[in-house]
Length: 101
Image 1 (cartoon, one colour):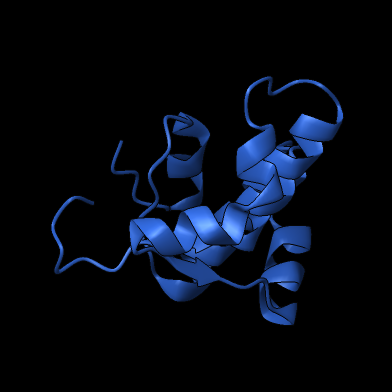
Image 2: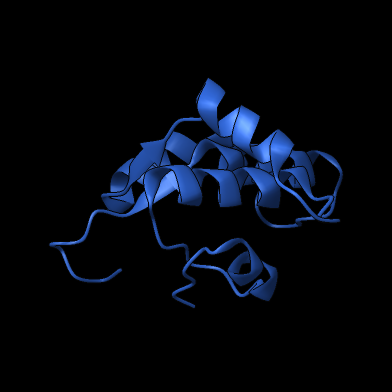
């Protein structure tokens, strides 16, 4: 991620998840990030990855017991766009997603 030649994509699902957790009080200290998510992304030189209809359909149709809607969307986006994902969630591998963390 640190190499300037890499394009780092940040899913709109991450903005959704962080904002939701801030609202519910489950992510203390992230209020500033939630309030200016796009600004943080831009300052880091990252690129946003919007959620498309195709991503939504993929996420909804993913098999298995995974209930977290944010993880389902991230998996669907990684599959659809053939992208690795930085996560410590091992369940992603069960969906054929390459984890880099």
